[in-house]
Figure 1 (cartoon, rainbow, N blue to C red):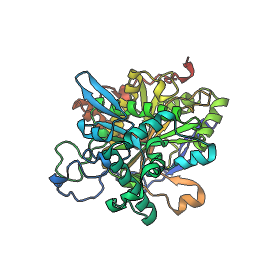
Figure 2 (cartoon, one colour):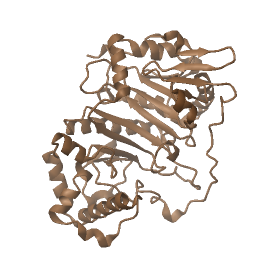
Figure 3 (cartoon, one colour):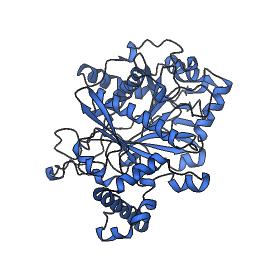
Amino acid sequence: MRDAEYLLQLKDGTIKQLNPFNETEVWTIPGRADRPYHGTGEVPVPLDRAQMGRHCAFCERRYYDTPPEKSRVVTTEEGYAHLDDLAADELFATTAHFRQFPNLFEIITLDYWRLNYGYELPAAVRERQAKYLATNAGRTQISNLLVTKRQAQTHGGKTRPNPAAMNHFGGDALSEASAALFGGSHDVIAARRHYIEGAQYNTQLAGSGTLTPDEHGEFIRFTAFAARNILEQNRYARYAVIFQNWLKAAGASFDHLHKQIVAIDEHGEGVDDALDRAVKRPNLFNEVGANYAIQNNLVIAENQYAIAFAGFGHRYPSIEIYSKAAANEPWAHSDAEIRGVSDVLHAMHAATGVEVPTNEEWHYRPKDSSVAMPWRIVLKWRISNIAGFEGATRIYLNTISPWSIRERLIPDLMRLRDLGQIAPMAIGDECCVKPNPLHYLEEK
């Protein structure tokens, strides 16, 4: 392993980076560095008050525009609670803070699992489907969704359903056609708000950083256990890809806060590369991750349970958040450990701002691997376009250096902490930065 060359600054100021897990080569070149990253240039437009709660299919007044919920988070006098498998005519009886439902347009379809593995929906899912379709509200919702999907596949656009086409689905045909809307292995976790509370303009979007630390903690916890449940339901899935695309420039269909969970039948090259390296070097994630960041003054923030540092060797400016816990999977963490990771991640989102398109990627140990690997999240700022130079050389140009990321975030984090908008944590030079802060090798 070429530790000394993961970050190399040349005399002219060029910074060469090498990703320690996949050997991606990245350069930050003087003159192209530190280009502005705040602001989309979008002109604010006053919101139509009559459309509040209806801005997109994930909004709280359009519950019928998504497939049937598997679960939702609501508030009670005791705090957050989960309501599972609601019937169609129960959807508007409560307001969901977060909702889990199948993606209408799956990446890996139910037919993929059926045709390649002989997968069938579990009996509990079939029973739930039958109960849902036994009501008029359920049948109407499902028929409309199937028409929407058919029209999108036929015409290449996600158009509104034509009620006259509803009679194309009935009886057994409706049950068979709607199977993926109940038991697919690609789910969405959608937040309630499209815009922040009291928003006046369309630029006042509600992102991860606009949630409270408590709300974000439940968002992360809900997502982690939803992923576990998907893996348990589909015995052929070897990994669940967990990610968040924020804004259309980062690949989102809607500018509405949501995460996605996609079960796949392999780990993917990125995960396998990391596992192969960890077999040969068990303390890899400390040595070339957290320790290397500490040695190069890249640590941004930390608390008892997690550490964040400016990433290196990524195609886009990135922040890496590592769990310090012994557990290797998100759902194996205690509530306090999940909340600790959430607090640091939330702070990074808040300091980044909702104007910046981002990808949030979760990495963790696959269920069929015994190799120790910590839960870590990479937050990428999608502020540059990959072009011909990268395609020809496999050398990627990253416009913001890791040290510049740290310098940009720390003042905003200090301000947000003073305002009480992020959870308490050490920031910048306050961080303890002891070597080997990650305890993933101690899992019992």
